[in-house]
Amino acid sequence: MSSIEHYFSTDWSALTGQDWAGLIITVLVFVGMLITFSLALRPSKRKELEEQKHKILEDD
Amino acid sequence: MDTTAQPQYDNGVVKYLTVGAIVFLVIGTFFGTFAASQLAWPALNFDIAEITFARLRVMHTNTVIFAFGGMTLMATAFYTVQRTNGVKLWSNSMAWWTAILFTIGLLLTVVSISLGMTTGKEYHEQEWPLAIAIAVVWTMYTFNFVMTIAIRNKETHSHVYVSNWFFLGMMIAITYLYVVNGLAIPVSLFRSYSMFAGVQDAMIQWWWGHNAVGFFLTAGFLAIMYYFVPKQAQRPIYSYRLSVIHFWALMFGYVWLGAHHLQYTALPDWTGSLGAVISLAMIIPSWGGALNGMLTLSGAWDRLRTDYILRFLIISLAFYAMSTFEGPVMAAKTVNALSHYTDWTVGHVHSGALGWVAMVSIGALYHMVMKLWKTEMYSMQLINFHFWLATIGTVFYIVAMWVSGIMQGLMWRAYDEYGTLAYTFAESVAAMHPYYAMRAFGGLLFFSGAVVMLYNVVMTIRMANARASKPVEATA
Image 1 (tube, rainbow over the protein chains, first blue to last red):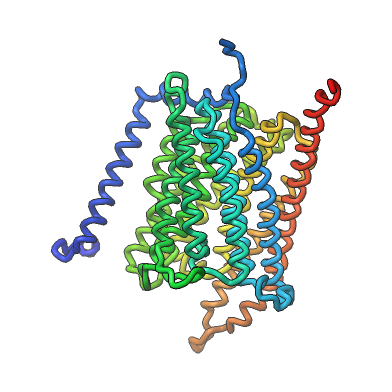
Image 2 (tube, chains in turn orange, cyan; image 1 turned 60 degrees about the vertical axis):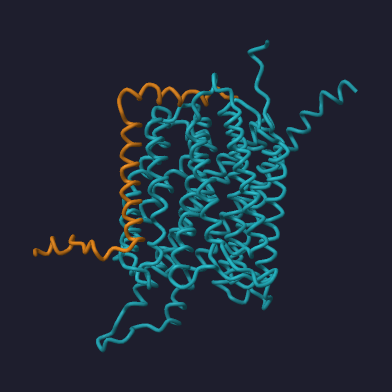
């Protein structure tokens, strides 16, 4: 096993319930972040979002 | 129907919180300057238990973070949620109860700490009756804010402006962080013990501790930035989409950072590494947000010459960018090995607290004073004077702590040719003295600026009230 393979190797059978919970939450947060960013950055949404920034200049 | 009429808002409670925040800024920076002076000249504790450094320092942190910072957040949240949603507060009376109970809770916190009542948990020192009371008041604040957004006219205000997202994120995160970290078993009216023990207690403590920074002192004040920078500059925020990305990156990322406070401890090594990695990743959204605020001035940078309030807001973003770069670097294990437990950490905290949090707050408070009392400031020159006192004071403070902190860390780990420590701990303390004096001077400058602000605001309010009463006298 190369040093890189050794570094990234995981003994899956040794993971406890808490380890699995943490792993799943981490992956879900990462996926959630990707979805959120892609929703905010999609070109079709640009005009709708950027329009919002002008409204507060007239609020009082 | 008169469509040109100006909307009416509940301003009374916002006025109370605005003045309260400035009063607590003066008190809190006085405690800080006094505590800093005690480190340079220990005789200043006068052998009075209630004002020894150990208690005074905690009175300082609670006053500046929760009293000044908390009241600023309440004032700005109640001010902006009405204007961005075009509606009065859901409950003005609940807002008043929130403000008054919060004030009483914070005064009792400071008194109880001076009497030696503390949980010993950093930034969560209130004993259990006060902690429960503050949690209830915070929930009232959050509920009123949410309900105000909920009752907005969805036809005219279908979109909720991004500053409200930051406020709401802060409110929700602080509620669960504060409650979980405060879980304790009371053994008497003024004594309790944490439900967590050992390394779990430390992990929970810093999960709260760093997120008090991440949500209370960052997300909440970014809400202030996203409203008050465009308003004061009279220009829309540079990129709304970037503000959305900034918000979600902060919400997803910040909660993972706490473990970087516990590098090289009994905590599993991977948790510290995770904390450091996410800390470094957070540089990207933090700098994105800082640039978003600064670039709002694109094409109008000349306004910084004449608009002293805008100066406060923009320099706060420079400090925000600086401290959100410095923090992640200090979280990395290699740097942390040198910086941890030294004054460098104190310097870093104050570049964020004085440079970012206080400066953005001061800019927003000046802006609100003029709008709420419908007047110009008593003296714009005093604002300029305050700006320089605050900026030079902050620079003195953080430079002193950088130099002393790095020197301290290097002295602690210096070995001689025989492998023994080159310096005793007492020698490192003695070497700190000039920097402690310099830090106290920086703090004195910042405190003086706060006094100037209070004077200027009081005179402005008196001037506005006198002007408002004139027509009444004329017709009487």
